Length: 433
Ligand SMILES: *Cc1c(COP(=O)(O)O)cnc(C)c1O
Image 1 (cartoon, rainbow, N blue to C red):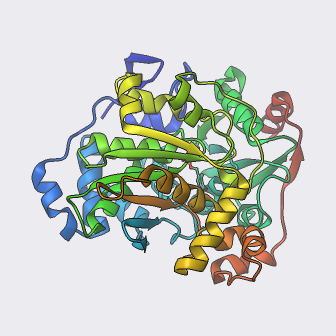
Image 2 (cartoon, rainbow, N blue to C red):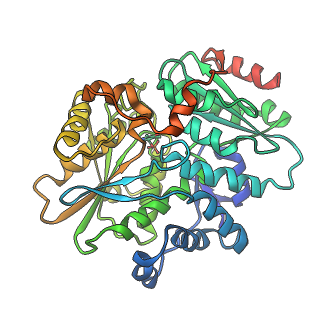
């Protein structure tokens, strides 16, 4: 499979180059040269396949020219090493739980695939590989966990000071070893800008081998399509139309859902659900894409004002805006609405969502209203509620149980360095390493 940049569809690079570069030199996003459509027999067998069996079929369809059969098997086994159950919350409303991985958020899927694939592609590389990551919370822990103690790799994580939950911060800043953390005096968009600029900086790129593990990287982005197939496989009713609601920030996750749809998965409508960082819902309404400074909310992993995967959505529909709008609706919600939904669903059904999942639930319910006879819906539950313990406890007015995996981090010491939001300071830091 070759990859082109959304800014230049004529210029192709190999899988290795796309993964190492992360972002194309023209600042575009890499896209697969073609999207393989899975045959009808695949969908007939899908309900009877295990998560890993299905994963191997999809990854083989995408990467059979680039990886050996053994590499594909190893990669998929490493990535899909925990379940993604579909849980019924209400009649016709399902939660796809993507938080059963080591850091309890869906980013574990992409991060595990990415770290494994990078080590396969870089096996012969002699230089130290530096992975730069900007995080609004969950990317940091997933990537840190994926690369922790991987030989020949150093990870540098930038996160906005005071804007990630304490627990999230503890999950990546306490590891040490080859994981280095910078607490940036700014917002997530500053972190993202600094990382992007580093990749475009000639001097830095001459002196060191830099790569990104952000959701812009195809090695993070593409594997996320897998659990959409698995969700459909678990649906009891395969006849009724299907809406899938994705709580979105950088729009990588929902973009991977569209990739699955383009590969033949029968999803009728995508619901882009956001908090007040509503750039994409507004675009779907007005046709104008206008990035804005990000605003802080209780669903902080989605506090993104300039969603970096946006152009992938358009590209997947041949840059046809009308086509995109016919397959996607968008809604946004305030913190009050999110908290209310979290509380109400918990009281009426006993199901506990995290604030991000609650945004996804709200988007789905908004879309389904009046269409329940025709549609069923899935919302993606992107993180374990325990990751947002203080918010969830405040909303419910009661304490919640923290998973053991999270508790273990609480007593550990944060090891991070402070940094301004100026690129030159970051560059100095890198050059001094
Ligand atoms: C990262 C994240 C999101 C947003 O996903 P995108 O792919 O950036 O749209 C949603 N929920 C949680 C819990 C996250 O960590």
